Image (cartoon, rainbow, N blue to C red; front, side, top):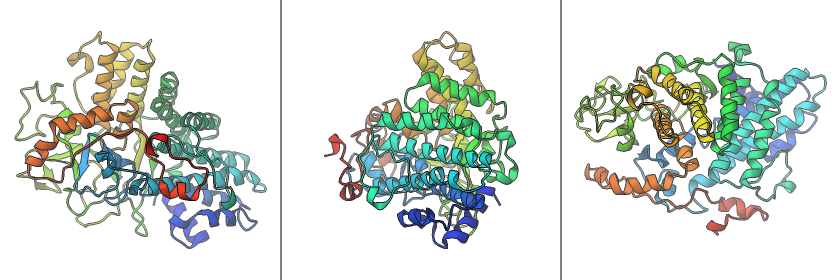
Length: 511
């Protein structure tokens, strides 16, 4: 069994004898501050595992059709749509959401539950008598990376939210929101200060698989900086990950998103799951079918043919057999007409595409209980983040940028950039190359929505969908494909939180 999941299970069973949703709620926070806890290093480890457990929440890094979670955000982007309009987030895509929308309150509560747990670890671990200083510093550093990860999700969705950095009593819970910049500045400085308190990735034994390494902290910094247009810092942080010399791309993209390869050196930061006590991941489960996880045609069309050309320009493309002669990532990511699913031929599905990536295809049970880990950050993303950051910052070497993209293409035997797109490209052209590569490499990994938000392209992609896809999809016989309307890059604060927090003021555009 995986280390993190085993320790989480022991912690929950030993201390709390209750469901994980109750672990470190406000009552528990007060209880854990007492002399009955925080007395040994094992207490600290158990509380830290509660922080990791919080990331497994189905509104954070797990998800199923009834919940949100970062992977489901791909279905609010131009990558896909869900079969049922009522699914959480569907109203955001349709532009009909408001402060009472389902996804808002649950995402908020799950995020602050995780933050509350990390604050407890950060505040109380240093008070434990005779704790090993190196072990204490490491646990505090892990908690700070987890806290920064959750605050990044909040900053990319709600933007301005309360910045809570210490344990709170119920009397202290009524706090105002902080600005987006205050949050970003805090979490980046917070993580920068603890990077060296974490072990190098090669120093973490297999018995501790899943714990955050120095590489994961640096990768987290690279993402935060890139997401907030700090391009020079993002490029530097990504280079530090590369320079560790530990990470590499997995040899086979087609097997990377399976349990047999989740410990490959490509995986930098993962939320771990195990099918134990019915506590596996739901994002990789299914009902024995894939019909509700539909990819939009423009995502399918984004994958080039094996000559490196778009399907509109290549003689290799066969619309009757869309996966033939395509970038190998197409078949790993999608199921299409004349393809196979669970060993059976897929027929009479021309024009339709479904998510294959991450789905536990080799299991015949209808379930949402998979041992598959969710990859928060992997090495291919680091290479593409550095490439994008270099171009966006200016003063870059084209050969380095192209070389970074080519590493990602080499893994799937796709032609090099210079052999198809050429050299001497403008910065805008290079960015388009990188954006293409991000989309086909990282589809359904919970990043496309945030990419479109930070590039401020979500609105135009919705307009493109309305003008070019909606009618065509509905004409194929699936009228549940719904219209989309872009409203705002900033989610409204949950009304349920405003009702109980007199100091929390709604964003101006949502009043």
